[in-house]
Image (cartoon, rainbow, N blue to C red):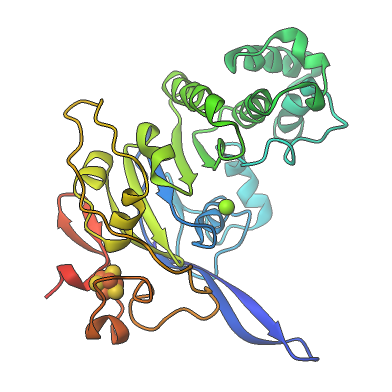
Length: 319
Ligand code: SF4
Ligand code: MG
């Protein structure tokens, strides 16, 4: 609720704080148990920062973060440890996130060593079960990360994140670094694991095509704020925000799914994302919006519910 994460900007020879980079600027939403919420935005939109704040890998500047009705936003490190096990993250780059000096077995067992009091043989047993769940072999536990392809390494990262049996997992662009040909395999694996283990996902991506199949609802972020959030089908079939329309215009329409998809109105996005250190006044999207008008310069649009569960922050939909 109302989560903000501002980073100080230091300037001058005294390195004083001269401003703030508003990476996450007043974001509120809920994720329901067992669902996948996709979060989409360009790089610099604040989506990864939001994910890290939700797990308290970064402290929020303001706002509350409720996990199963407990506000974890102010918990001290030690108090937070109780919840760490339940919340895990899978990072984008399987080459950077795995320590190359550790065997796969050690990598998967490490979270158990840190967070549980399981014996060595119990840890080994869990790692062996987990490696099979992600589609690799027990004999792979003796190998090292460099012996695996990108897709296999991401499977190892997933095993490492899930070995603690978390309830909530943030997937921060887990397939963006992979070849397109193996993205679908890893996404399918994540979906199967979600069903098997009863996981709840926050799935971060930089375009709307990746989250399309895995998400139940999708939120679109722009410069640290939510521009639109809706159930998946509703968002893809009836996008309201000009930014969402622009993002959808750049992905091909494939109508093989149930009911297919309407031909969409095309909105061409021009220009780059402005700096979050110096965002435009009023609606922060106005410098790129083909429908910007006077009110957009002075007044910031709030997120309002237009249809059941479909929220949008744009003056075109408020009177
Ligand atoms: Fe465009 Fe104005 Fe809507 Fe912002 S509020 S998206 S500038 S029409
Ligand atoms: Mg990122």
